[in-house]
Length: 247
Image 1 (tube, rainbow, N blue to C red):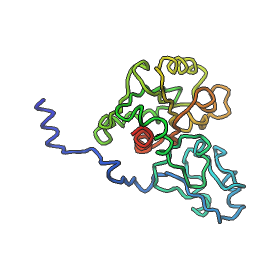
Image 2 (cartoon, helix red, strand yellow):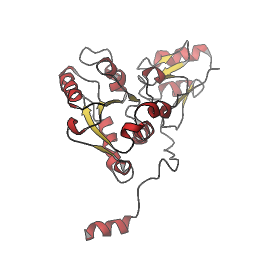
Image 3 (cartoon, rainbow, N blue to C red):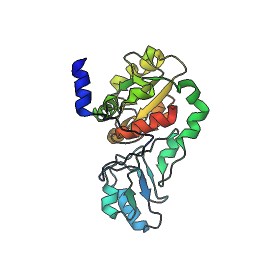
C-alpha cells in the first residue's frame, strides 16, 4: 500500500478529463474523412481505383468507413483535394448504412437515449471476443484499462464470462473456426444484450473481405447495435462510442 501511495505522489494524476475536456490527438492521426464534393470526377475515380478496400464510391463521392482501413492512399493521391482525414475520432454509428459518409454522421446519442441509456446508464459489463483478429483492435481495447483512459471510472468493465456481461464486443473477421465460439458466447449472454462490432474486420471483413474463410460482417450473423470503425479504432474512438452510446 505504501508503495502504491508513493507511486501516486511521484507520478501525479495521469487520467485524461474526457469527455469534460476536448482531447486533441497527434497530427498524423486519421479520423473522420472529409469528402470534397467539388473535386474533379477523374480525381475521384483515380482514388476509387487505388483504394485497396474498394471503400470509395466515385460517382456518389462517398466513402464507406466500414471498409476503410484509414491507410491514407486517397488523401495522398488527391493531395487532400478529394479526401482529407480530419482529427475527429468520434466516428461510431448505430446503423451500418451510416458508415457510408461524405464526412457527416448522425447523432449517436439520439439512438442510444431511446434504447440503452436507461438499461445500462449506471453500469456496463463487456465480454470481448477476438474472432481471429490480428490483435490490433484487441490491444487498443485493452489500453482502456490503463490510468490514462481509466474506463472503470465510468462504471464500464470487461468481464471473463459472458454470463456476467451486458454486451459482447467482437473484433476480427470472424473465421470459420471462431464462428461457433462466437455464437455460443452470444447465446450465453443474458438478455437484454448488446452487440458491438469493433474494427473494419468485424464490420465488413476488412482486408480479408472476399475470403471464404471469414464472415463478411458481424451483422450477417448477429444483430449489431454499435459499429466502431477503424483499423484499429483509436482508444479514444472506443471510449467515445461507449460513453455516448451507454452513458
